[in-house]
Image (tube, rainbow, N blue to C red; front, side):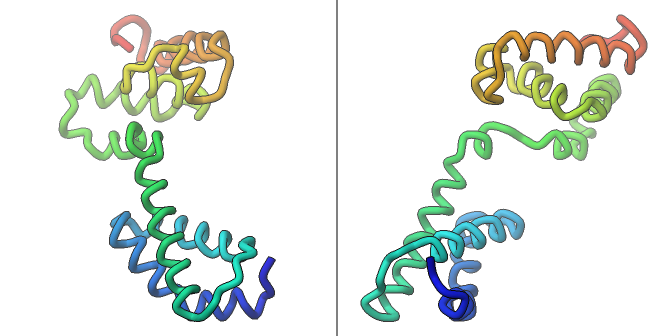
Amino acid sequence: MRSEYEVNRAVEQYADTVRRLCMLHLKSYHDTEDIFQTVFLKYVLSSVEFENEEHEKAWFIRVTINACRDFVKDFFRSHIVPLEELLHQQEEFTPDNSEVLEAVLSLPAKYREAVYLYYYEGYAAVEIARILKKNKNTVYTLLTRSKKLLKEKLGGDDHET
């Protein structure tokens, strides 16, 4: 593990480079900050002895690029749209669908995730169990309970879920 002095020096020296590389790959301030922290955490925990300043700079560049690529390739990032983003795109939905979407968004998180993956992404309960790292029977229970909650919120059988 590196000393506080080494870490502070590295952050001061390479922060701009790391942030620019992240923005180039990710085009998102929040994602950039996440990867920035990841890169410097790897530096803190790394035992690599650098031959010179160029070797250290090259290490930061390579680790940053790899972290960005891993982030972009991440399954959830490439397959799931945040529910909140869908709410902001209401103009694409009919009024009934936006009402259903608002009801889904108002569900507790454990139900919301299962409902979203099942109804909006089209995953089977077995796949959802694998994604959420839950038992498949738990997923079935979450879906059943969430359907009941949605019926209550939407006023019975008038709406399809």
